[in-house]
Image (tube, rainbow, N blue to C red; front, side, top):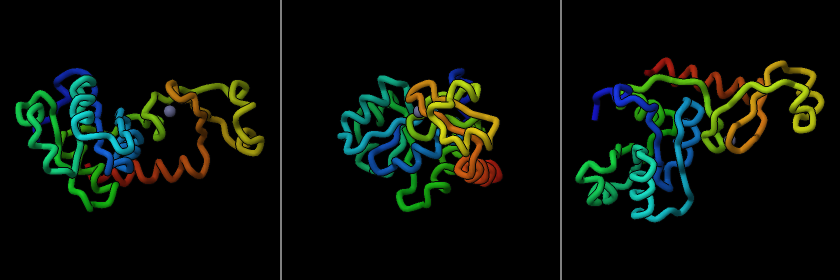
Length: 165
Ligand SMILES: [Zn+2]
């Protein structure tokens, strides 16, 4: 489980178990697609991971006894349950030999694309619209982001993650 997997071609994507919502958000901020569903049943979690070719992330030992995981049809990684979410994020990226990538939408994991100020005027508070130059729209949920205080906090956290990889 320690070999880099970038050589497989496509950027890996993840499916987090129902306890790991925070990890899913920070994997997205680290540049990876990470699915997460509240209250998802174990069998569904395994099946969805297989369908999407996603790496299953879980802190739930019995899940690793499930047949598709045992047979290696679903790739899975055990994540320490009580570790702080940033430690979990670093653990996953380090274990799989993955770099920090351009951030994706923390809400849904969609790709963020730069968008002109004029196009987001109706969606951004006037103060922020005047104060910032860079705006991004999520290609999936359509939410707009900009380089404000919140973004700075995310960048600072990303730097903390990167320093540990
Ligand atoms: Zn989104």
